[in-house]
Amino acid sequence: MAYLFSYFSSAESGDLEKIWFAVSRDGLHWQDINNKEPIIESTLGTKGIRDPFIVYDDKTKKYYMLATDLETSEGNWGEYVKTGSRSIRIWDSEDLINWSDERLVEVAVENAGCAWAPEAVFCKEKDSWFVFWASCVKEEDDENPKQRIYGAFTDDFITFSPTFKFIDKEVDVIDTNIVWSNGYYYRISKDETIKAIMIERSPVLIPENIDDWEVVEAEVPNNFLGLEGPEVYYLREQKKWCLIADQYWGNKGYLPMVTDDLGSGDFRVLNPDEYDFGELKKRHGGVIEIPDELYSILLKL
Image (cartoon, rainbow, N blue to C red):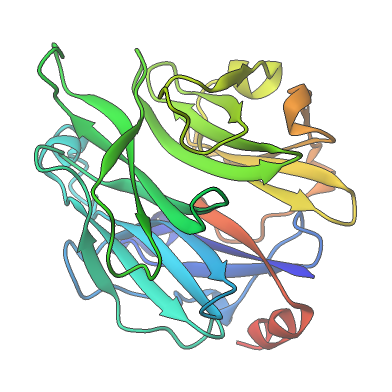
């Protein structure tokens, strides 16, 4: 098996946000493909694409890519969270090369100001995909609007169940990623208030009580400030889990951390000589395992 990294890289392009791909044999050393040119550009909504995330559906034999509908050239983040798009972008593909026309699907609640960083995880309990994202919403008891994580179920990435609240904390929460390991769903999120990464786990994806998630104390990601866009994936050769997060403070790029057991919270930050993210500066994206034959084909783009 190999790995595909989908990401956006607006800093290098000086253009609207677009999607680039990189591939890797080991999940740590990445090679930009397609002559370092974007794989996908947008024609809908704001025409800006950020935060891509790809999953593979064994039933349909298709890959689905989700992304944020957001263009940030004006840098007005105060408005982006309050009056931004309530839709997410979705494409599908059988081979990661030929993609369908993009579609905008409105998923956020009516009073939401945005729908950021959509991702998906397969829910074993419901035998369905759970799609989730961050929305800034002012509820009745809120003094100010707050970022929360919302979600909905889908079987085809076209029609969705009613949206419901998935994460609601005292702090603002964005950029959630979810993986399954050793009997638990692990959700890794950005605490938008202090700009650090937090980890929780639960044996079921949607517990009866929204707060029934166990906190995993993880000193390194918990105390390493200025991180966002966390993504977790398994390094099969090393038999370790890798957590990568974008060091957006200082525009330093992705920082990888590894652990033998997500439940232990014991992460080691890799030394610079242990990884290589390639020439293009990668911003919030997603990593997925791919077959060796697809790796070889993508490498030739």
